[in-house]
Image (tube, protein in one colour):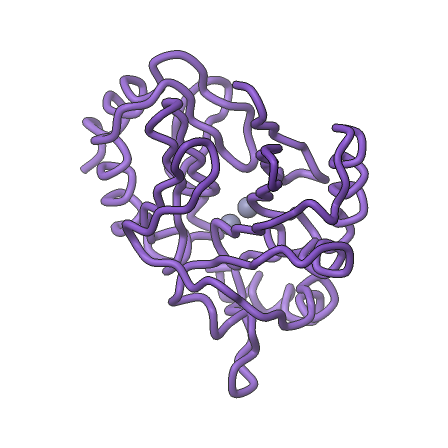
Length: 227
Ligand SMILES: [Zn+2]
Ligand SMILES: [Zn+2]
């Protein structure tokens, strides 16, 4: 896939679309921002060329590097509108604790303050059906469940879907998102069924290598087995 790169970053991923203007999709952990910028330079490009920074959802392993990106670029930040207050800190709001197990949530709480990025401005609040320019058209598909504002990005001209954390793919087998970090599993199932209606060849996930070759058929088979 020309111009589309998946960059592994400390357990998460960023995707870089290196067109005339660079689009970055997710930014890894807070400690990963510098590495992401290094990767962009490795591609022979400059961080100042970043035009858009699109987040699949608000989790700290996806938005963490935003501070470094914003220091080096004027990239417009885009996120689903329901999650905008979390990251902007509107009215003192902070992102919800991602752990769904109450004991783990309690244990993780003191850590969250240090791993979450400082509140940041969202320039483009997104909603289902929005279209942005990269790769001849990038369509925003609202795929809630893992988080309320999780989005997937569909590139119909190129048969690619970037689904963030909407799914897992362990040892080549598609699976539901991890329930420990997912806020609404019935909704996550519905979102997967919705993605399965799209036509695409390549399915990119944030914590796994891409599913290549008729990925929509693999997803349809998986979705058909969901209650
Ligand atoms: Zn997540
Ligand atoms: Zn994640």
